[in-house]
Image 1 (cartoon, rainbow, N blue to C red):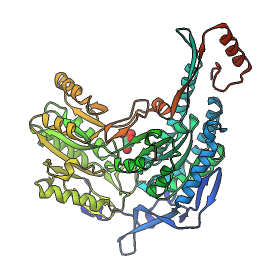
Image 2 (image 1 turned 90 degrees about the horizontal axis):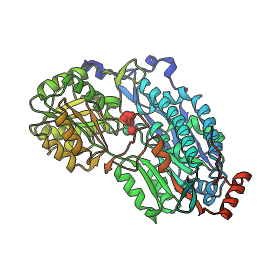
Image 3 (image 1 turned 30 degrees about the vertical axis):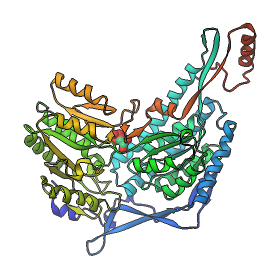
Image 4 (image 1 turned 45 degrees about the horizontal axis):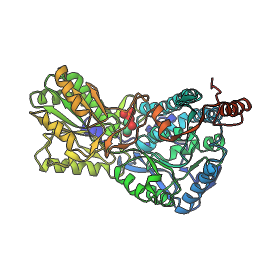
Amino acid sequence: MATIQQIQTVFPQEADIPEKYRLPGFLEQTEYLIDGEIRHWSGEMNDILSPVMLQNEHGNPEPKIIGRTPLLTPNEALQALDAAVEAYDNGRGYWPNLTVHERIQHIEQFIEKMRQKRQEVVNLLMWEIGKSLKDSEKEFDRTVDYIIDTIDALKEADRTASNFVIEQGIIAQVRRVPLGVGLVMGPYNYPLNETFTTLIPALIVGNTVVFKPAKYGVLLIRPLLEAFRDCFPKGVVNIIFGSGRVLSGAIMQTGKLSFFAFIGTNRGANDLKKMHPKPHVLKSVLGLDAKNPAIVLPDADLENAAKECILGSLSYNGQRCTALKILFVHRQVVKPFMDLFCKELEKLKIGMPWVDDVKLTPLPEPDKAEYLSGLLADAHEHGAKVINEHGGTANNSFFYPAVVYPVNDKMRLYREEQFGPIVPIVPYEDVDTAIQYIVNSSFGQQASIFGNNPAKISMLIDILANQVSRININAQCQRGPDVLPFNGRKDSAEGTLSIRDALRCFSIRAMVATKYDEQSKTIIRQILKDGSSNFLRTDYIL
Ligand code: G3H
């Protein structure tokens, strides 16, 4: 278990940082990408504060500003939008008219260049958002795999679309075509992966985009700017830095966007969507807030439940949209469950992201520890306690996980998405308490059920299937594997993402149809023979 002394001295001295993970110096980034050109900004800048603090000569942790990024204005945002609009050219631009095979070649080139930046990006993930080395590497590799799988999925879709449908005297060919110009914004907890799981599918189907990186995890996009510039025709990808509300608001108000891919809060999404003058024109693909519950039934394998709930609630310090954010545990087993849970928690190593096997690391949001302490004070006021030793101990950006029991509906922790290392436990007698919680929740992403009785589990499955989008049996909530649909109900999401679904989200079907008669057949045969249409064709991508 982490001792108080370890928590108090969790931050290293400059000299303790392994050579390999040191930053090359202060990262002053003036660059942004518009219209195929890396431009330099000389206006206001945004300091990038690392969650990794450093001990000064008196042993006190001090914040470390690791770099600065541009705080662009609506003016640059609109220039980026104009470049994307021009590159799309109402669907007549170079990029939307390339064949699928040609666009895939651009993306493959990008993957090669991206791979060369692995170490730099992984290092910045650690410094900017405090993600452990192992999880940062996983985020990078999973993203590359996702892009490769997206290429395969697109090839498969294109092969299927090369057929003709002949029905009721009509011959038709149906293909998916791009939507137009889009805005892509990602979250700070997966600033690379979650952003690229919308950005890359949107691009590969022929759209053009403005991409605004997340609030934290911004500098890590810098090493990829040249790859974006060199692998895509000008104006296809434009990357701007600054305040989401200022830049995205200006873009949204123009009404020129056809789609909006956003992973963040439902409040942020609502505010931005409303700014579009014709909301029906805007297709939104959103991954939003969640408060995924676990239900531990009295006959559950408690050891497994405790281990999965630890993974579910505390991986990356609980900062996953899919995290288990409230645990409903049957009163009969709540005591042994909590003992096992706390025992597992004690095994989690604290430290800086590059420490071997580290699991608990500092938090990137500057006021997060204060916010979490506020949640604990509120829970305390309403009758709950922190039951694990040192739970809730804060040291600047580091917050040791707190297991809070017994949580009830008067507490903020019951409904608020803590998005951090606090685990609220609600004891129940009747499973209906948990069911009603889920029914009345404004979120509907996933749930986990822990138990062994097939009849009870099937009853819960049938109820929850109409409340949430994924029910995990004896396992934590999670997004992967990426071939499976990732979505949510109510305030948790709009649209479905998966390798295949994302391609559908960012495209629309278009069709060529004609009478199945000799005259039409002659025309179609000639078009196919000449290869004169990018759309109407039967070639097969090998
Ligand atoms: O923050 C939300 C992520 O999509 C979660 O993904 O379940 O694979 O950690 P994950």
